[in-house]
Length: 424
Image (tube, rainbow, N blue to C red; front, side, top):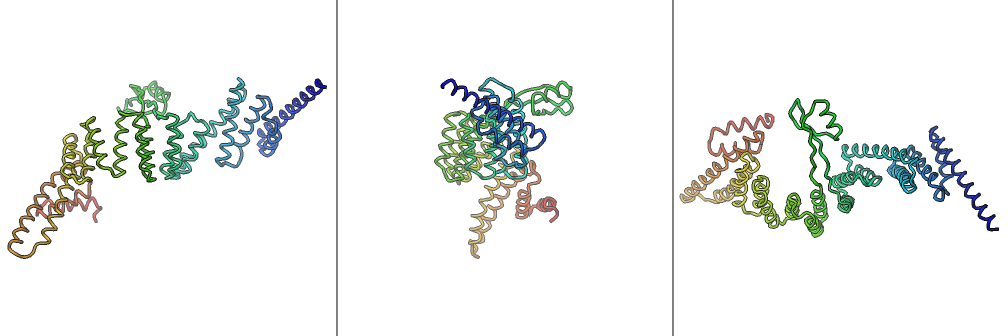
């Protein structure tokens, strides 16, 4: 009896295998002829017992399922993921069984799907639909998780689309997988222009060098994106009103990269956005101590000192920036603005004066002080115009100052302002 039972079971399994083969062959034939309805019916017939089938039949089933789903007129992301998962299943099955009969075809199908998906994501991004782009890019990452760059760009698009919850999810996933975003940058010097050109791949760069159009090929590494990711996480928390989480995120990043200058700058910027200007000043001073010849750092310190109400200190930082970069127009404009801010108190006192002889005498003193302010601000405004001659506000301010000083340069500034404003 036992022998008969085993034989009966064997015959049953064999019959099932034969039935599945027949169904899969029918699906394959229908797909070739473009008859999706028949193909799907055949796959449905094989589906019930596919998990108990031999690996070869399993792999073929998932390949055909991927092809049928990819060919469906329904191009939704749900269908895309279903097709991609089917293709991935083929590779998984054959890697486990040591076979490769269908893997190459499945890999090609998956690559074709992903290429189409990424092209649509780029189109969405270019059209300003960042949420749709983020969704597609994240799906692109899910279908091949070694492509972590897709996850990074999904997070960036989620931020731009103000989908902060998903952006945090993507950024935290990047941190979990240890994403740095460091890539090789392939460059060579263009013989005709002398400029350094960047190429999309080593092969393209080497082809241009062999072709004689470029020389001096080099490969360099791009900067790590970890500081930027940390910054964005902190900024999202700040946007959501979660200040403590923002500070914790920054502290965690600093623990991993304590001497990263970019991260130090982002921490300072975070406190600036949180309104903690004292902490910002403290951090920025430490950053400047490590890079004392950086005019941008000195300029930023000037801005924060001014916001803290210490205009004297702000001017000192701006002046130091100008020593390093004499044509730093923004620093010149800010110094002029601080100088001219002293006009407010003078105007208020002048307007409060009466008609006595003492008041007239005081008025003249205050008027001279105003004119001295104007003369002190003029060199900075003129210096700013040398590097940025189209600065409309600088031209307008100089025009008004020169009129107050009865300086004939006022007419020159008036003509210049008219030209910049299109003759209006």
